[in-house]
Structure formats: structure tokens, C-alpha cells
Image 1 (cartoon, one colour):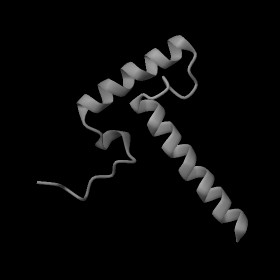
Image 2 (cartoon, rainbow, N blue to C red; image 1 turned 90 degrees about the horizontal axis):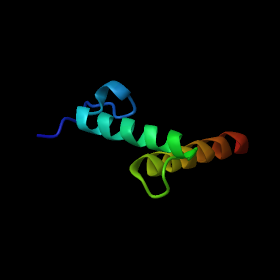
Image 3 (cartoon, rainbow, N blue to C red; image 1 turned 30 degrees about the vertical axis):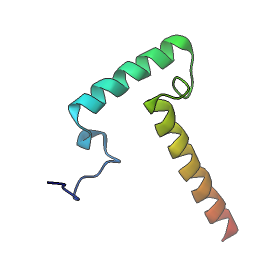
Length: 64
């Protein structure tokens, strides 16, 4: 059953498997000098999504 009370913006709410996967991707990205994660990786997609949302929010705030 889906629990809609989860806050997926909180690190503590992510499941253990996802946390381990991201930690592995963080380490690989750091080792290889990828500032936004390995291109096409889950980490990269998360960072790009976050960047897009931030840019949209900044544009919205500057338009006001």
C-alpha cells in the first residue's frame, strides 16, 4: 500500500537500497571528477531535475 505521507525530499525517508545505490554513485562520480554524476546515471538525473526546478523557481521569483 502506498503511503502518501512520505517526504521524498528528506534523506531519512529514502529506502536503504536507494541510499546505498546513491552512495555508490557519489563515490564513482567523485573518483572520476563528474560534478553532476556519471552522465545518464540516476544521480545525474536527480541533480539535473533539481537544477531545473531551482532555475524555474529563480525565474518565477525574478518575474515577480
